[in-house]
Length: 457
Image (cartoon, rainbow, N blue to C red; front, side, top):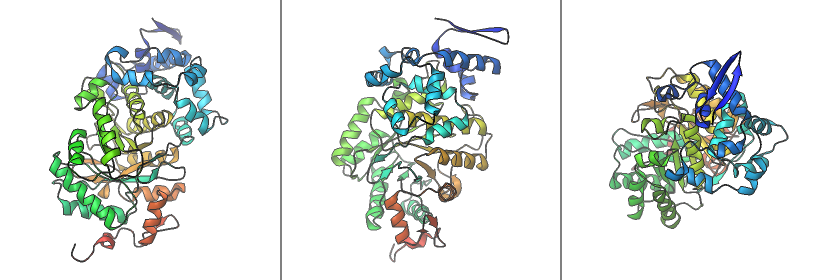
């Protein structure tokens, strides 16, 4: 079926819903690389006009990856609440946007409708929103989850403490961990990206994290972000872990390129609920990032935003504790500059929240992108205003192992103070017991890692 519109005397014709979605997307270098982007701003506006007039039903009935060949599509389609969907399906995308932004539409309304939405519906409405729309709408929605503590409650902004080390040296990791704790980071997670993806190496780091968590009675979660299969084997052999991690894609082919299947995730969740060290039901952690499907030729000719939305629809099915987009990590081939990076971060956060996913963000960039630390901090403040569950913290904003730039350990505390937000409640009380925080603000003792160094360590 062809879709047409006339704009300034020029007729624009689009051959499919997939083409409309691609050309209605904001400028992304990855879409240009994939050959799915609008050729001009006028064509982009025309595609948005066509998209605005589509119904939600049209978007559901035209997934960008066929149902028959893709389990991400099948999971998304088969698990909708049909009653809720039937109440919404005849809305146009433009009407849906107006309903989301209407001051009378409540958090409870949005939570109910999330059960009715496919990824393509959410991607469609996102393409019609401005950055301010994305911040305003996302701030209406909080999506909490519980592992050992509860993330995502209104008024909180949590952090993942990322003490990466170039050699997985335990003492170096520990020093970085203590520094992060001293700045009030780590309430969402103490989570390391390992250099060595082996069962023995992951187990060593997990044991050190578990010892520190228990010795200092830190109310948080621990994880080492190895491959899901390596983590499964480590836990089976007795390594302590509160959750299991995996990067995910928006298609079955993309997930297979990452080296796992849906059955692997079910195995991990079942294992963690039986042998994990957490007390709560949400025991999975997923990471995403616009462009990952294109990098593995698993995008099926779809734009990177729509494929990203499919990641969140997939993640929702497993009730994770944490999800985040590593928004600028893949590089300028997919998000060229700060404008694209900031837009993608706001889009991803909104889409995940609308789909009912507990969402955070690694506000980051690589050194060959057209971006700098000011751009990263701008995104952090915008996401804090939008109600993001958590951000990442690394030493001095510089991850020397992954070779990219992110938030520093203390950035979240500045944003908390500006926006009147707090850490996760139990973690704030713990910080107060060490004199690191008082009345929601860091004290003069903050930044002193020797608070956690004991004789003989």
